[in-house]
Amino acid sequence: NAGVTQTPKFQVLKTGQSMTLQCAQDMNHNSMYWYRQDPGMGLRLIYYSASEGTTDKGEVPNGYNVSRLNKREFSLRLESAAPSQTSVYFCASRFQGEEKLFFGSGTQLSVL
Amino acid sequence: GENVEQHPSTLSVQEGDSAVIKCTYSDSASNYFPWYKQELGKRPQLIIDIRSNVGEKKDQRIAVTLNKTAKHFSLHITETQPEDSAVYFCAATAGGSYIPTFGRGTSLIVHP
Image (tube, rainbow over all chains, first blue to last red; front, side, top):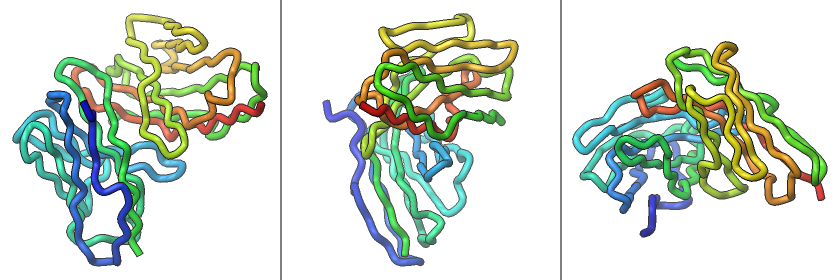
């Protein structure tokens, strides 16, 4: 099992460009999450998907969209990147009825 | 919504000393309190957790305590080792939501 896989690992964008961060899990988990991590700010929830076909906004959803493509995949899209979106992005997943989150290895995004 | 405060932001100790990281939460409905460890450049990983019906839990050199009345919980690491150096995040989850709110993190540095 690969666990939670994120691509790409690193990305540099110019202001206004768009991109999609990919996340896939092979643990048959129902719920998936996108967090951003900024220095001194901890992990802040961007979007959450309780199950295939459902998505909900988290604490910091502005400037992002998500797609729960199927049970395995949950993508995060930046339509028009801004420097304030420079961050490390983590995808996570959880098995139904359990609390433990499994994180991917992260995507380091820089917006110039 | 839930608000989790974590202190200190940085903790420096000598190898063999004990380390304590403290968190407070605001939502009395929170009933699950995990701790995640993030080594430099790695993904966060769950190291220990506690539920609201338990006051203390131990796992080898780490322990967590919970004071529901004060809405306060702590991570205790005894006999610290250099490999304990990492960022530690506390979190609180309201019953049934499965959406943890994270503290801002504590950078623990263990000097050999």
